[in-house]
Image (cartoon, rainbow, N blue to C red; front, side, top):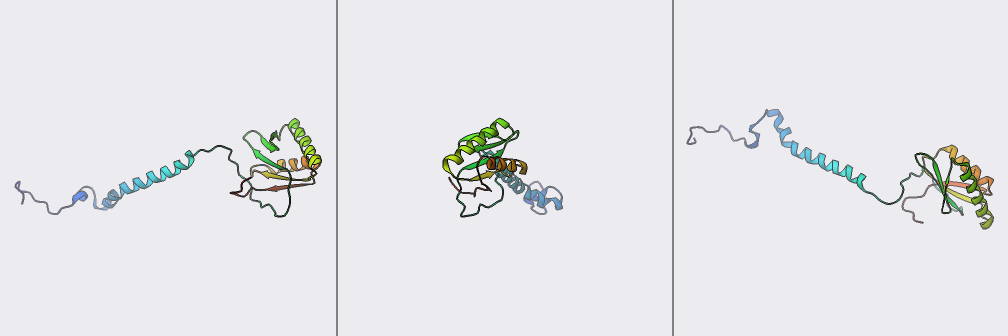
Amino acid sequence: MSPWGWSPERTQGIWRYGALSLRPVVAAAPWVTLGLLLLLFWIIGGTLLASKGMLFDLPEAALSEGEATGPVALIMPTPHETLVFFDDSRYLMGDPNSMAALGEHLAEITARSGRKTLLALADRRVTGGELMAFAALARRNGMRKVLFAEKKAGEDE
């Protein structure tokens, strides 16, 4: 007995408050909160990393070995237009003047090097019609083969 005349029937520590069925939930709440905070930091941490360059998705197609390629073109869509990067120049797919300039450039490269195979690395968001238009333009300007391929992860040029 205590000097005040009261003695606890049982020592309950931190469990003395609340219903018996909710006591395990109350005990787990800090750990659940910690887990949710760690999950939030992990999700946000991945989106806050920034690096220089452009992000684009290449299609799932393998380049066959043994085919020697000459010039390389990169076809990539943007929100308003599709871009073609070829020989340190940028061309717009929707602009007829730009496509004519690309055709002249392809014809010049073909005549100068004699290589008649063009490797096109296309983003998977490029439509099939744009790929066919690009292949037709290349064939009209001296290319005999247009290979569409992906760049393997980890490959450096």
